[in-house]
Image (cartoon, rainbow, N blue to C red; front, side):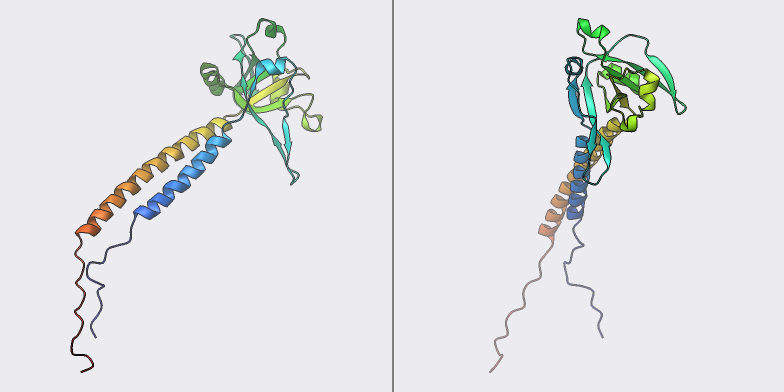
Length: 212
């Protein structure tokens, strides 16, 4: 019995398709993380003027989720309040609109670890979970709100680095997806050229003497 070794000119399976699929998955996850890391933007001036942004989002399942915000403003003073947060050094300072009257009417405070605090001040980007002592769940203010000494009618924006982590991870996945998509395109071109150079077997001639 003669063993079969495959048809002449057979080629291995394409790698461009799986690479393109992987690139699409990475791009989808990266885009989702980018959106997840982009909170709702609110101006500190609006809160100083009396606007009260919602801080809780009650799901149909009964779960409770806090709203994520980016407060547009500037940190006041050169000496923020320092406190210990589970063994890590954190800083807290008023987050103001910059208007003259805002210096005595601080309604938002920003709290973050020392590294995150200084980075946010340099980038002028303040984002995180918004907490309120007066509207605290079960009337229990967060530890950060208590440590900052936030008045009952004010908010504290707590930045634990989660949103920045989403943005960084999402950007890395998007870049990785783009790189893999380029590899898929290169692999596709190589496969097409290889297929064009591969000789195709000639069809067998039809028998003229059949049936005679």
